[in-house]
Length: 194
Image 1 (cartoon, one colour):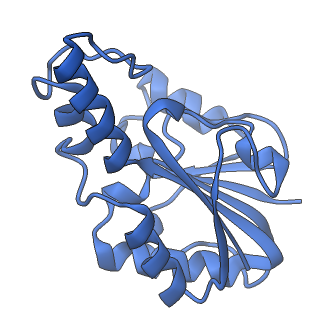
Image 2 (cartoon, helix red, strand yellow):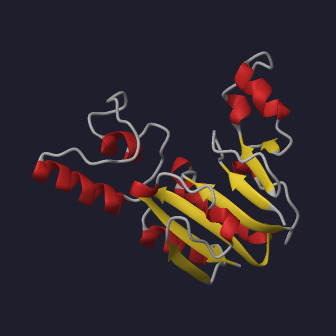
């Protein structure tokens, strides 16, 4: 079994069958940096820019996790990546996507304002990137778009996926894919099957 963890950042399981993929060497260019030394020592970390394609052959991957990655790509890059995910998945393979959910952000923010009680977003908000957690998480400088169930439906459709479902935290059509779910409070989870 092969499971790919795209845009893994610091969420990198160091066990088989996971292969963690990101472009973190760009953040830590010096081989003397402790973070870079850690990455270089991980047997299952692959440094690559996924915008240039997925370095796996057709039909060779059982599952792909894309947790809070797609919002960092523009619309065309997302579709290109999803088409490539479809290419590398085995028949019946699963792609699990999670993104910040604008609907949840809106509902939780309105409740915050109405009640005067801060919402528990599950992550700290120190105000560094904006005045509210919504400012930070949805409109973070590294985010290029807001994704919703409708926009992801369209992207999956044009990427050749014909079956996908809204998923729940910790539950997957391919169990290991949900083992490292994060940001459950404000995320939208979708799974697509090849």
